[in-house]
Length: 424
Image (cartoon, rainbow, N blue to C red; front, side, top):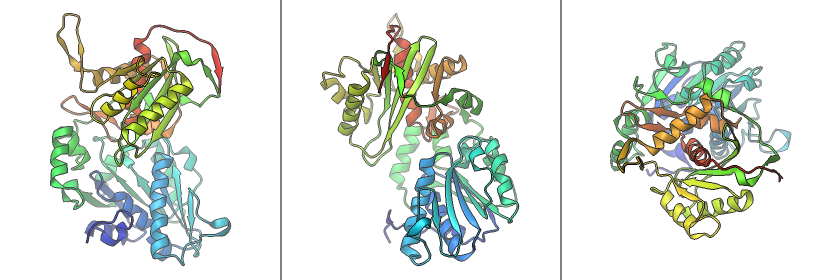
Protein backbone atom coordinates (compact mmCIF):
# COMPACT_ATOMS: atom_id res chain seq x y z
CA UNK A 1 0.00 0.00 0.00
CA UNK A 2 1.30 3.47 -0.88
CA UNK A 3 2.16 5.77 2.02
CA UNK A 4 -0.47 8.44 2.69
CA UNK A 5 0.98 11.53 4.35
CA UNK A 6 -2.44 12.49 5.72
CA UNK A 7 -3.37 8.98 6.97
CA UNK A 8 -0.01 7.50 8.03
CA UNK A 9 -1.67 5.07 10.47
CA UNK A 10 -2.80 3.00 7.49
CA UNK A 11 0.79 2.01 6.59
CA UNK A 12 2.69 1.82 9.86
CA UNK A 13 6.09 0.13 9.97
CA UNK A 14 6.51 -2.95 12.15
CA UNK A 15 8.59 -1.05 14.72
CA UNK A 16 5.94 1.69 14.91
CA UNK A 17 3.21 -0.83 15.65
CA UNK A 18 5.33 -2.47 18.35
CA UNK A 19 6.18 0.87 19.96
CA UNK A 20 2.59 2.15 19.89
CA UNK A 21 1.33 -1.01 21.60
CA UNK A 22 3.84 -0.87 24.46
CA UNK A 23 2.38 -0.73 27.96
CA UNK A 24 2.11 2.71 29.50
CA UNK A 25 4.53 1.66 32.27
CA UNK A 26 7.40 0.95 29.85
CA UNK A 27 10.12 3.55 29.33
CA UNK A 28 11.04 3.70 25.65
CA UNK A 29 14.18 5.02 23.95
CA UNK A 30 13.86 5.79 20.22
CA UNK A 31 17.05 6.44 18.24
CA UNK A 32 16.09 7.19 14.66
CA UNK A 33 17.44 8.63 11.44
CA UNK A 34 15.77 11.60 9.80
CA UNK A 35 12.17 11.22 8.62
CA UNK A 36 11.77 7.65 9.87
CA UNK A 37 8.35 8.17 11.49
CA UNK A 38 9.01 8.96 15.15
CA UNK A 39 6.59 11.92 15.26
CA UNK A 40 3.82 9.86 13.69
CA UNK A 41 4.43 6.98 16.11
CA UNK A 42 4.51 9.21 19.19
CA UNK A 43 1.34 11.09 18.21
CA UNK A 44 -0.60 7.87 17.62
CA UNK A 45 0.69 6.33 20.85
CA UNK A 46 -0.49 9.38 22.81
CA UNK A 47 -4.05 8.83 21.55
CA UNK A 48 -3.98 5.05 22.06
CA UNK A 49 -2.85 5.50 25.65
CA UNK A 50 -5.62 7.99 26.43
CA UNK A 51 -8.33 5.82 24.89
CA UNK A 52 -7.23 2.39 26.09
CA UNK A 53 -4.95 2.64 29.13
CA UNK A 54 -5.51 5.93 30.96
CA UNK A 55 -8.35 7.27 33.08
CA UNK A 56 -9.50 10.58 34.53
CA UNK A 57 -6.63 12.59 35.98
CA UNK A 58 -3.99 10.74 33.96
CA UNK A 59 -2.35 12.81 31.22
CA UNK A 60 0.16 12.41 28.41
CA UNK A 61 2.60 15.31 28.07
CA UNK A 62 4.36 15.99 24.77
CA UNK A 63 7.51 18.03 25.53
CA UNK A 64 9.32 19.66 22.60
CA UNK A 65 12.07 22.23 22.44
CA UNK A 66 9.84 24.73 20.62
CA UNK A 67 6.11 25.40 20.54
CA UNK A 68 6.01 24.75 16.79
CA UNK A 69 7.33 21.21 17.26
CA UNK A 70 4.77 20.54 19.98
CA UNK A 71 1.90 21.89 17.86
CA UNK A 72 2.94 19.57 15.03
CA UNK A 73 2.86 16.43 17.20
CA UNK A 74 -0.46 17.44 18.82
CA UNK A 75 -2.01 18.20 15.41
CA UNK A 76 -1.06 14.70 14.23
CA UNK A 77 -2.58 13.21 17.38
CA UNK A 78 -5.81 15.16 16.88
CA UNK A 79 -6.07 14.06 13.25
CA UNK A 80 -5.67 10.41 14.30
CA UNK A 81 -8.20 10.71 17.13
CA UNK A 82 -10.75 12.33 14.82
CA UNK A 83 -10.32 9.59 12.23
CA UNK A 84 -10.19 6.52 14.50
CA UNK A 85 -11.91 7.50 17.76
CA UNK A 86 -14.38 10.30 16.90
CA UNK A 87 -16.71 9.28 19.75
CA UNK A 88 -13.95 9.31 22.40
CA UNK A 89 -12.68 12.86 21.91
CA UNK A 90 -14.30 16.08 23.19
CA UNK A 91 -14.73 18.45 20.25
CA UNK A 92 -17.10 21.08 21.68
CA UNK A 93 -17.51 23.23 24.76
CA UNK A 94 -14.93 24.41 27.27
CA UNK A 95 -12.86 21.24 26.84
CA UNK A 96 -12.63 21.37 23.04
CA UNK A 97 -9.15 20.96 21.49
CA UNK A 98 -6.70 23.87 21.71
CA UNK A 99 -3.10 24.32 20.56
CA UNK A 100 -1.99 22.84 23.88
CA UNK A 101 -4.64 20.35 25.04
CA UNK A 102 -6.79 17.55 23.61
CA UNK A 103 -9.36 16.11 26.05
CA UNK A 104 -11.04 12.69 25.96
CA UNK A 105 -14.42 11.71 27.39
CA UNK A 106 -12.85 9.32 29.92
CA UNK A 107 -11.10 12.29 31.57
CA UNK A 108 -7.59 11.71 30.20
CA UNK A 109 -5.76 14.42 28.24
CA UNK A 110 -2.87 15.01 25.83
CA UNK A 111 -0.89 18.12 26.77
CA UNK A 112 1.71 19.78 24.56
CA UNK A 113 4.11 22.45 25.79
CA UNK A 114 7.48 23.85 24.79
CA UNK A 115 10.24 22.79 27.16
CA UNK A 116 12.71 25.52 26.24
CA UNK A 117 16.27 25.14 27.46
CA UNK A 118 15.59 24.24 31.10
CA UNK A 119 12.01 22.94 31.38
CA UNK A 120 11.26 25.44 34.16
CA UNK A 121 7.82 26.24 32.72
CA UNK A 122 6.76 22.59 33.05
CA UNK A 123 7.39 22.29 36.80
CA UNK A 124 4.27 21.42 38.79
CA UNK A 125 2.68 19.06 36.27
CA UNK A 126 1.96 15.41 37.07
CA UNK A 127 1.74 13.02 34.11
CA UNK A 128 1.38 9.32 33.43
CA UNK A 129 3.41 9.35 30.20
CA UNK A 130 6.04 11.91 29.20
CA UNK A 131 6.81 11.96 25.46
CA UNK A 132 10.03 13.86 24.68
CA UNK A 133 10.65 14.89 21.07
CA UNK A 134 14.21 15.69 19.89
CA UNK A 135 15.64 14.72 23.26
CA UNK A 136 19.27 15.09 22.14
CA UNK A 137 18.71 18.87 21.95
CA UNK A 138 17.57 19.23 25.56
CA UNK A 139 19.82 20.11 28.47
CA UNK A 140 20.31 18.13 31.68
CA UNK A 141 18.50 20.95 33.48
CA UNK A 142 15.36 20.05 31.51
CA UNK A 143 15.39 16.47 32.75
CA UNK A 144 16.05 17.58 36.33
CA UNK A 145 12.93 19.75 36.07
CA UNK A 146 10.59 17.17 34.49
CA UNK A 147 11.59 13.82 36.01
CA UNK A 148 9.74 14.40 39.34
CA UNK A 149 6.40 14.79 37.51
CA UNK A 150 6.43 11.02 36.88
CA UNK A 151 6.92 9.93 40.49
CA UNK A 152 3.56 10.34 42.23
CA UNK A 153 1.39 8.32 39.82
CA UNK A 154 4.05 5.93 38.56
CA UNK A 155 4.55 7.61 35.21
CA UNK A 156 7.03 6.67 32.50
CA UNK A 157 9.09 8.39 29.82
CA UNK A 158 9.53 7.92 26.07
CA UNK A 159 12.43 9.85 24.58
CA UNK A 160 13.07 10.08 20.84
CA UNK A 161 15.65 11.87 18.71
CA UNK A 162 18.31 11.81 16.06
CA UNK A 163 21.67 11.75 17.92
CA UNK A 164 24.02 14.71 18.35
CA UNK A 165 27.31 13.44 19.72
CA UNK A 166 28.13 11.41 22.80
CA UNK A 167 27.03 13.98 25.32
CA UNK A 168 23.96 14.77 27.37
CA UNK A 169 21.01 12.94 28.91
CA UNK A 170 19.82 11.44 25.63
CA UNK A 171 23.12 9.61 25.14
CA UNK A 172 22.98 8.44 28.77
CA UNK A 173 19.54 6.93 28.11
CA UNK A 174 21.01 4.86 25.27
CA UNK A 175 23.01 2.95 27.91
CA UNK A 176 20.18 2.77 30.47
CA UNK A 177 18.73 -0.74 30.74
CA UNK A 178 15.44 0.57 32.16
CA UNK A 179 14.50 1.77 28.65
CA UNK A 180 13.21 -0.46 25.89
CA UNK A 181 15.29 0.44 22.83
CA UNK A 182 14.12 1.14 19.27
CA UNK A 183 16.80 1.83 16.68
CA UNK A 184 15.78 2.71 13.12
CA UNK A 185 18.18 3.69 10.35
CA UNK A 186 16.94 5.71 7.38
CA UNK A 187 18.31 2.93 5.18
CA UNK A 188 15.75 0.60 6.77
CA UNK A 189 12.86 3.03 6.27
CA UNK A 190 10.75 2.17 3.18
CA UNK A 191 9.88 5.82 2.58
CA UNK A 192 13.48 6.78 1.76
CA UNK A 193 14.66 5.98 -1.75
CA UNK A 194 18.18 4.62 -2.27
CA UNK A 195 18.85 7.39 -4.78
CA UNK A 196 17.95 10.10 -2.29
CA UNK A 197 20.13 8.61 0.44
CA UNK A 198 23.10 8.21 -1.93
CA UNK A 199 22.79 11.87 -2.89
CA UNK A 200 22.62 12.89 0.77
CA UNK A 201 25.71 10.81 1.55
CA UNK A 202 27.67 12.79 -1.05
CA UNK A 203 26.16 16.16 -0.11
CA UNK A 204 26.60 15.88 3.66
CA UNK A 205 29.79 13.87 3.96
CA UNK A 206 30.26 10.62 5.85
CA UNK A 207 30.07 11.95 9.42
CA UNK A 208 26.91 14.02 9.00
CA UNK A 209 25.26 11.22 7.00
CA UNK A 210 26.05 8.65 9.69
CA UNK A 211 24.61 10.95 12.34
CA UNK A 212 21.48 12.23 10.64
CA UNK A 213 20.43 9.21 8.57
CA UNK A 214 22.10 6.18 10.17
CA UNK A 215 21.46 7.58 13.69
CA UNK A 216 24.91 6.76 15.03
CA UNK A 217 26.43 8.35 18.12
CA UNK A 218 29.82 9.71 17.08
CA UNK A 219 32.66 11.23 19.11
CA UNK A 220 33.52 13.41 16.11
CA UNK A 221 30.39 15.55 16.52
CA UNK A 222 31.25 18.81 18.30
CA UNK A 223 28.63 21.49 18.93
CA UNK A 224 29.57 25.02 17.88
CA UNK A 225 27.34 26.89 20.34
CA UNK A 226 27.23 25.43 23.85
CA UNK A 227 24.22 25.78 26.17
CA UNK A 228 25.90 28.40 28.35
CA UNK A 229 26.73 30.53 25.29
CA UNK A 230 23.13 30.30 24.10
CA UNK A 231 21.69 31.17 27.52
CA UNK A 232 23.91 34.26 27.81
CA UNK A 233 23.24 35.52 24.27
CA UNK A 234 19.51 34.78 23.75
CA UNK A 235 18.08 37.24 26.27
CA UNK A 236 16.24 39.97 24.33
CA UNK A 237 12.52 40.65 24.14
CA UNK A 238 11.00 42.15 20.98
CA UNK A 239 10.77 45.95 21.17
CA UNK A 240 8.16 48.37 19.86
CA UNK A 241 10.74 51.17 19.62
CA UNK A 242 13.99 50.45 17.79
CA UNK A 243 16.99 52.29 16.45
CA UNK A 244 16.57 53.85 13.01
CA UNK A 245 16.21 51.82 9.87
CA UNK A 246 19.63 53.08 8.70
CA UNK A 247 21.30 50.61 11.06
CA UNK A 248 19.26 47.49 10.26
CA UNK A 249 20.78 44.48 8.51
CA UNK A 250 19.01 41.50 6.96
CA UNK A 251 20.27 37.93 6.69
CA UNK A 252 18.28 35.18 5.01
CA UNK A 253 18.38 31.45 4.45
CA UNK A 254 16.24 30.22 1.59
CA UNK A 255 14.02 27.14 1.65
CA UNK A 256 11.79 26.08 -1.21
CA UNK A 257 8.21 25.08 -1.87
CA UNK A 258 7.62 21.72 -0.25
CA UNK A 259 11.16 21.81 1.16
CA UNK A 260 12.65 23.45 4.23
CA UNK A 261 11.59 26.73 5.78
CA UNK A 262 13.01 30.14 4.88
CA UNK A 263 14.41 32.23 7.72
CA UNK A 264 14.45 36.05 7.77
CA UNK A 265 16.71 37.54 10.45
CA UNK A 266 17.08 41.26 11.26
CA UNK A 267 19.86 42.78 13.36
CA UNK A 268 20.22 46.31 14.70
CA UNK A 269 23.74 47.75 14.84
CA UNK A 270 23.75 50.25 17.69
CA UNK A 271 27.53 50.59 17.45
CA UNK A 272 30.47 48.37 16.56
CA UNK A 273 30.38 46.70 19.98
CA UNK A 274 26.62 46.45 20.44
CA UNK A 275 24.44 44.53 17.99
CA UNK A 276 20.92 43.35 18.81
CA UNK A 277 18.46 41.10 17.03
CA UNK A 278 15.04 42.66 16.55
CA UNK A 279 13.19 40.02 14.54
CA UNK A 280 13.11 36.36 13.54
CA UNK A 281 10.56 35.43 10.85
CA UNK A 282 10.00 31.90 9.58
CA UNK A 283 8.05 31.04 6.41
CA UNK A 284 7.39 27.57 5.07
CA UNK A 285 6.59 26.09 1.67
CA UNK A 286 7.26 29.06 -0.59
CA UNK A 287 8.44 29.36 -4.16
CA UNK A 288 11.65 31.36 -4.55
CA UNK A 289 9.86 34.33 -6.10
CA UNK A 290 7.54 34.45 -3.06
CA UNK A 291 10.54 34.48 -0.73
CA UNK A 292 12.03 37.36 -2.76
CA UNK A 293 8.76 39.28 -2.41
CA UNK A 294 8.88 38.80 1.35
CA UNK A 295 12.40 40.25 1.51
CA UNK A 296 11.40 43.20 -0.68
CA UNK A 297 8.39 43.83 1.56
CA UNK A 298 10.55 43.66 4.70
CA UNK A 299 13.01 46.10 3.13
CA UNK A 300 10.16 48.48 2.43
CA UNK A 301 9.20 48.29 6.09
CA UNK A 302 12.64 48.37 7.71
CA UNK A 303 14.86 50.09 5.09
CA UNK A 304 17.84 47.75 5.46
CA UNK A 305 21.38 49.06 5.19
CA UNK A 306 22.56 45.77 3.67
CA UNK A 307 20.98 42.43 2.74
CA UNK A 308 23.00 39.21 2.93
CA UNK A 309 21.72 36.09 1.20
CA UNK A 310 23.05 32.81 -0.12
CA UNK A 311 23.12 32.94 -3.93
CA UNK A 312 23.80 29.21 -4.29
CA UNK A 313 21.21 26.49 -4.88
CA UNK A 314 17.67 27.65 -4.14
CA UNK A 315 19.05 31.01 -3.06
CA UNK A 316 20.13 31.89 -6.60
CA UNK A 317 16.54 32.45 -7.70
CA UNK A 318 15.88 34.76 -4.76
CA UNK A 319 19.16 36.62 -5.27
CA UNK A 320 18.32 37.13 -8.95
CA UNK A 321 14.93 38.62 -8.09
CA UNK A 322 16.49 40.97 -5.53
CA UNK A 323 19.02 42.15 -8.12
CA UNK A 324 16.17 43.07 -10.49
CA UNK A 325 14.31 45.18 -7.94
CA UNK A 326 15.30 48.86 -7.68
CA UNK A 327 14.88 48.93 -3.90
CA UNK A 328 17.18 45.98 -3.16
CA UNK A 329 19.69 45.55 -6.00
CA UNK A 330 22.26 48.04 -4.64
CA UNK A 331 22.22 46.72 -1.08
CA UNK A 332 22.14 42.95 -1.66
CA UNK A 333 25.31 40.87 -1.23
CA UNK A 334 25.77 37.22 -2.26
CA UNK A 335 27.08 35.26 0.72
CA UNK A 336 27.48 31.81 -0.74
CA UNK A 337 28.35 29.06 1.73
CA UNK A 338 30.55 27.44 -0.90
CA UNK A 339 32.55 30.56 -1.81
CA UNK A 340 36.00 31.32 -0.44
CA UNK A 341 37.55 34.50 0.81
CA UNK A 342 40.08 36.03 -1.61
CA UNK A 343 43.39 37.27 -0.18
CA UNK A 344 44.98 40.54 -1.24
CA UNK A 345 47.48 38.69 -3.44
CA UNK A 346 44.66 37.03 -5.37
CA UNK A 347 45.06 33.59 -3.84
CA UNK A 348 42.27 31.68 -2.12
CA UNK A 349 42.23 31.29 1.65
CA UNK A 350 41.65 27.87 3.20
CA UNK A 351 38.52 28.72 5.17
CA UNK A 352 35.09 28.71 3.60
CA UNK A 353 33.05 31.87 3.95
CA UNK A 354 30.45 29.80 5.80
CA UNK A 355 33.02 28.90 8.45
CA UNK A 356 34.18 32.52 8.72
CA UNK A 357 30.59 33.66 9.30
CA UNK A 358 30.01 31.05 12.01
CA UNK A 359 33.26 31.96 13.76
CA UNK A 360 32.27 35.62 13.52
CA UNK A 361 29.01 34.91 15.41
CA UNK A 362 30.79 32.75 17.99
CA UNK A 363 33.40 35.45 18.70
CA UNK A 364 30.86 38.27 18.89
CA UNK A 365 28.87 36.22 21.39
CA UNK A 366 31.92 35.37 23.49
CA UNK A 367 32.87 39.08 23.47
CA UNK A 368 29.35 40.04 24.59
CA UNK A 369 28.94 42.24 21.50
CA UNK A 370 25.73 40.63 20.23
CA UNK A 371 22.44 39.72 21.88
CA UNK A 372 19.71 37.62 20.26
CA UNK A 373 16.02 37.22 20.95
CA UNK A 374 14.86 34.98 23.79
CA UNK A 375 13.12 32.68 21.33
CA UNK A 376 12.98 28.87 21.62
CA UNK A 377 13.25 28.41 17.85
CA UNK A 378 16.44 30.48 17.75
CA UNK A 379 17.92 28.55 20.67
CA UNK A 380 17.01 25.23 19.06
CA UNK A 381 18.66 26.25 15.80
CA UNK A 382 21.87 27.36 17.52
CA UNK A 383 22.00 24.15 19.58
CA UNK A 384 21.69 22.02 16.45
CA UNK A 385 24.89 23.34 14.82
CA UNK A 386 27.94 21.07 14.98
CA UNK A 387 31.29 20.45 13.30
CA UNK A 388 32.16 16.96 12.07
CA UNK A 389 35.52 15.19 11.85
CA UNK A 390 36.09 16.65 8.37
CA UNK A 391 35.71 20.17 9.71
CA UNK A 392 32.39 20.74 7.97
CA UNK A 393 29.61 22.60 9.78
CA UNK A 394 26.12 21.08 9.74
CA UNK A 395 22.84 21.48 11.57
CA UNK A 396 19.55 19.60 11.79
CA UNK A 397 17.76 22.93 12.10
CA UNK A 398 20.25 25.45 10.75
CA UNK A 399 18.02 27.90 8.84
CA UNK A 400 17.65 30.54 11.55
CA UNK A 401 21.34 30.44 12.45
CA UNK A 402 22.30 30.68 8.77
CA UNK A 403 20.21 33.84 8.50
CA UNK A 404 21.76 35.31 11.66
CA UNK A 405 25.36 34.71 10.56
CA UNK A 406 24.69 36.52 7.27
CA UNK A 407 23.02 39.49 8.94
CA UNK A 408 25.90 39.74 11.41
CA UNK A 409 28.46 39.44 8.63
CA UNK A 410 26.89 42.41 6.87
CA UNK A 411 26.70 44.43 10.10
CA UNK A 412 30.29 43.77 11.16
CA UNK A 413 31.77 44.45 7.73
CA UNK A 414 29.91 47.79 7.47
CA UNK A 415 31.64 50.35 9.70
CA UNK A 416 29.34 53.29 8.94
CA UNK A 417 26.71 54.29 11.50
CA UNK A 418 23.80 56.68 11.67
CA UNK A 419 21.30 56.64 14.51
CA UNK A 420 17.88 58.00 15.42
CA UNK A 421 14.78 56.60 17.13
CA UNK A 422 12.02 55.04 15.05
CA UNK A 423 8.65 53.78 16.35
CA UNK A 424 6.40 51.28 14.56
